[in-house]
Amino acid sequence: MRTALVFGGTGQIGAPLLPRLHGAGWQVIAVSRRPQRPQPGVRWLAGGFERCDDLPARVDAIFSLGPLDRFAAWYAHGGVETARVVAFGSTSVETKVASDDAHERDLVARLQSGETSVFATARQRGAAATLLRPTLVYGAGRDQTLTRIAAIAGRLGAFVLPRGATGLRQPVHVEDLAAAALAVVDVPATHGRAYALPGGETLEYREMVARTLAALTPPARLIEAPAPLFRGALALARLTGRMQGLSDAAIARMRQDLAFDATPAATDFGYAPRVFAPDARALGRKATPPDNP
Image (cartoon, rainbow, N blue to C red; front, side):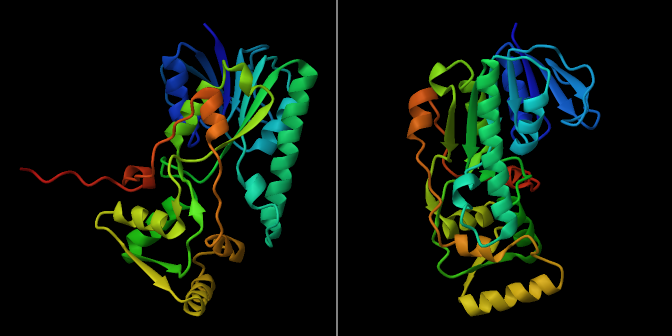
């Protein structure tokens, strides 16, 4: 039986990956800062990247599903031996490289540094590393984009977008990312490579939001406002402490195409993500039970 060490097992991708590993015959050791309920095939260790007692001396694979820069620092100094590393980064490493937002440029720098470090450490140790870069993640009701949109629209019954939000997007479900993480492990072609992992459908930003609103109960209305009106409404929302996370750079990107080619991932390890069809659960909303017949 092979053993996997998993960082980020309680996160969006970790939740579906742990049962997949168990189902594939892996023994799983997962790290968490908080106590976790027992889970078949999973042994939980208390700790994090800074400190974690009782780590094994060697495992067959390490999966990093959380912040890439923190994992890269741990891996560079960590004492756990492994022949295989699978770590998640983000397509933000490409889409936000020229952002006007200093925080986003800092994110890009940390992602770039993390990727470089993971590949360099793997080479030094004779291990094989693969980096996976998801696009816009959804499916666990914990993302910072679609789940936030659903929460706002659920309260107000509507969501406002600036006109012209036609940039292309490829939202990707967490289950498809978990499947990809497991799929690459035994494929030598993925060694030393980074892959974009887009969703199975490319659609305009406004259409992505429209489908999100349609998944709510009751469905929420999409309002497209002229740019000056939208900027005024956004300024007012910020003054009242709302929409602080929606930067001007993020608004500008609503008009930009952020689409990636899934062909390398499909060719090398059979990546085949689903189309974008969100439901209430995927958006962090309670599903409405069906009416009694």
